[in-house]
Image (cartoon, rainbow, N blue to C red; front, side, top):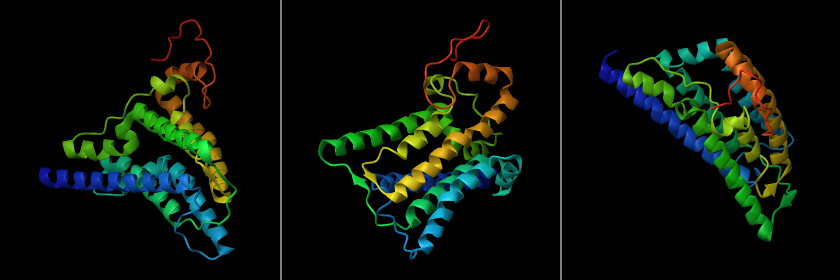
Length: 252
């Protein structure tokens, strides 16, 4: 493959990845704000319940599967260069979000709608949740989380260099700020519906349980350093941290 062709493919993959990311996250922000009451799915009930359940399950199932050893091999094969694996992962996740939020069939039932001052309080909380999630992604390694790592390495003709284990910023308060931030976006909108509640309950459970697999992988990669970090910093909720034992240094 010539350099010009390699760079062109890498840039095209990057554009597709980030374009899908913008669409997927944009749809999520919009439709969650209205409690999934304005989504565009039109499956007749009661079949809509099965269709919604399939949409609900496809994201966590594929998201977790692709992080396994076999899943990472699949990602490396999806494209003209194995360096695009991380880009493929972000691209697929973005398309999954877009699929769910665009084609969810609303129940048409409104449980609660914030009014007056409370509406603006909830809007502020919703914006803050997204801000927290964005900061967690930034501090966790923007290139890796956004899919930039793969296509940028390919464009430069290099091997992707994965970032070090994050222990700064929000990662000094909780080991899983991205999952916590994702969960917060599911509960802070000013409109509550059965649709939103189903999504929030199912995906919050995923956000609590899924990082356990990630932590096993980190323990294997970083060894005692990660286990010391586990002792200092809470798993999920940013509760007061334990004081480091003798010989341990605080997270940087």
